[in-house]
Image 1: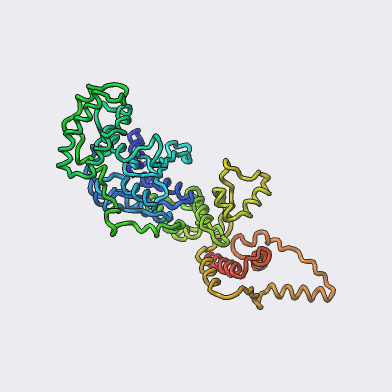
Image 2: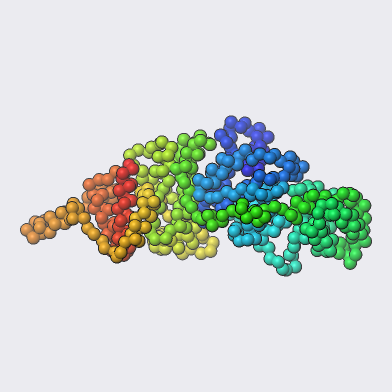
Amino acid sequence: MYEAQGAIESVRRKGAARASLGKNAELRLLFDRVAGLAYLPVIVVFVFDGAKRPSEKRNTAVGAAEHYLAQDFKKIIQNFGFYSHDARFIQNLHFNFAEMAYLDRTGAFDVVMTSDSDIFLFGGTHVIRSPQDPSDRDCVEIYIVEASGPNFLNPASLLFLAIMLGGDYNPAGLKGCGMTKALPLSTTDLAHSLYDATLSLPEHELETFLIGWREDLKNALTLNPDNILGARYPSLAASIPGDFPDPSVLHLYANPITSENDPDFKPDTAMWVSKLPDTAALAVLCQQLFGWDNILDRFSTKVWNGQCVRELAMVKFFFWLPSVTPVALTATGTSRGAGTHESGNAWVPGPILRSSAAGLVDEYHRVSGKPRLDKHELYVPVSTSLPSFAQEEQERVEERWQAEEGEKLSIDEENDDDEDITEIGQAKEEGEDTDVTMDPEFPTAFTGPPVKCTPVAIAMFMAYKCFTEDLGVSTANAIHAAFIRHYDTM
């Protein structure tokens, strides 16, 4: 939120008028960020500042009230099928790095995405650095902390570096001390004794400890024992203030309060499951927040790809790829005419598509003549031009079928197609011409409202699924129910 706010302020300082940026420009940037994450087969949890936030960070006052973007941002997150977590019992933690690090260490998070290295100070072990190249958002840095190896920095070393170089709660650090001087000392007893004292001593006793610790630090800089620094720095030693470091700042870093400290407020991580976007609610929200009247066009570039990827990632049996058109347009009171059939292209990560629709991948390569995917070619196109059937209806049919016994495909005795077949058989016996030509409307039988040949097309499609692909009666029931719902909503 602060990054979005800063980005808009930066544009305004360059002369752009707020009106030219559109309604709720900061929230629109956040919407685009969430839409980008929705394109990935991941479950995303956004961690917000809790009730106990710091009064000051980086010499800037931090208000007690929630950020003005938070409530609307949480609605966007929810409607995209993601989650938000208020770390209610975090004290003095900006951006909740301690809470995220705790959830990372306990396995509630597989990885934390952030651009702030403070996550390591609080114990984060699996971190993706937020994309730094605007032209390539897929290029990220991944950090995995292992408690071994020559480059491992333990919590004592990280606390020492934060104090010496500066962090959220002591932006200045020790003036004149850079990484060249601080890093070698972070592996010595100076760092470990400071860390142990901070964890074990109350603030007034810590102040007493720091008197002797400052002298040890001055001696290390002045005398350079064991030549660990490569040079002596008497001027830096003489400049160390008598109140360095601040005991309260040490406690903020070493003793953060997270949801680990109060079981009543731990997040229910079992509820963090994969969900599809609520495109109806999302469409209404976008109209309210951004004043969009071209929801379909906006969603085609910002929502559909993610919707397609997430549906494929969740598939268990067979699937349709419903567009967001019907629910989005119904929710916003707009219409595209009599039909709800929309088409377009989405790009889906190859591993997801191969696991859920291997036949489509094989057919794509066969028809296109392109070689099979390799590790450098992660995406293949999938058409989303199927009618907008309701997935809920499919799920209800499958649940009902699972409760039944056996698989028996019944045929409606009153079906007009049966009568047509009987008439053809009789005509053949009487020696009449029985050549059957395809209805000219057959290629577009599923486009728009039903036509005369639509029932035949549906029957042929169901027969192919049930007999050629051997999918069974549950497939037929689901197809039948989906078509009924599709045409009832036209």
